[in-house]
Length: 500
Image 1 (spheres, rainbow, N blue to C red):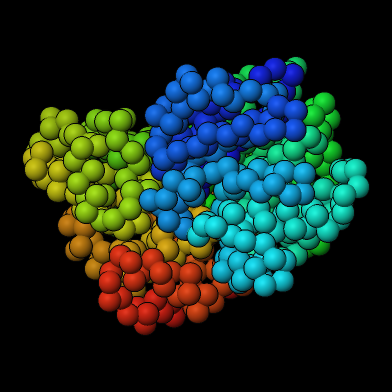
Image 2 (cartoon, rainbow, N blue to C red):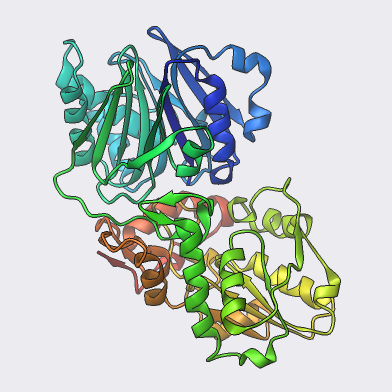
């Protein structure tokens, strides 16, 4: 879950890309980077940290040119502490390429070995994005062989990428002296849209990025489709994958995306309202509404669902937590210790809304359970008589391998546990989860043309069809050993995992 943007414009793009990254900051807070192109030369600056900290006036002045791209990083593969793995990535041949990537390659290790042994390309980091860049570079070199680059050559290279790469990937790349390339994986798991203004063309992870910078949203780039924008701003589209199916990541609508974005024809805000409606139906079978005094959301993503639930059940809706906006999203913070400590720094209670009341807390999802446990205890400390907890998403029972940081089963509070066991761990008086099918229907009804969703973290079905128990164990082996020291690989067994 990173945020990416690319621009071809008639005016300098450094400030425009900076502003776009600010609108994508929620998608990654580990590192940020911008590259621009002037003539045939790239100018790049990237570093660990938030956008406002990475780029100073001197950095911005050193980024000339009328086209460029940028990324905010949220690490799921590679070394999160390495500044070298901040994006964009660069390779000098053919032409000169820079690339930013949102997603996660499931066959990155096999590709890395293949690139070294067969393609004679060297990968210098543990990032799957560098692997993807080199696959693109190799395929582009095969189809051009020194001749003048045409859009048809670019699309042929992307076809080669689709044939070799597995997993989720939304990509924006610059080809020195020629233009901007953007494409999505054949399942459209990670989002990517395109828009225009009188000055040029922008592609980005979320529509809010375009609208916030004066661009009109044209449409989403389709699964397996590629877009090439030449330096004059002319757009060329072409499908480049043999088989496609539109299965966007459902967690984008539950939590990841901004509510004011529209992804693949679905309003994120409306999706969360719909989740509140279906959650209300689930709630009444567990906790009678007359036993609830007040509905309180856990900021921020759960607010639309909580408001809709409260309205349907005729319950008072109140804000009970004040959020410190200068603390990062706890979901993407590595390590339980850091995550637990940050909850109290991030949220403070309004005690009057809890004292002597039976409160229903509504969250967008429950992943590791650490945050939920702390928040429930905060409500009790503030004087709540009973604390009920409702999740607008179903139990997260399986690892996500497509770019969200829920990689190992032992980190997931719902893995191999009943709802009552989870309730005991979190410490609430009742725990109500969304139903998987109800979630898919609530969101899918907003765009019936979609083939479905990737909901693998909820239902264990991996839409790319190449994920097995062994794949997951292999992808997570290094992470588990580094975090747990003596982690037994047998703990990675997922008896219910499926492939589509």
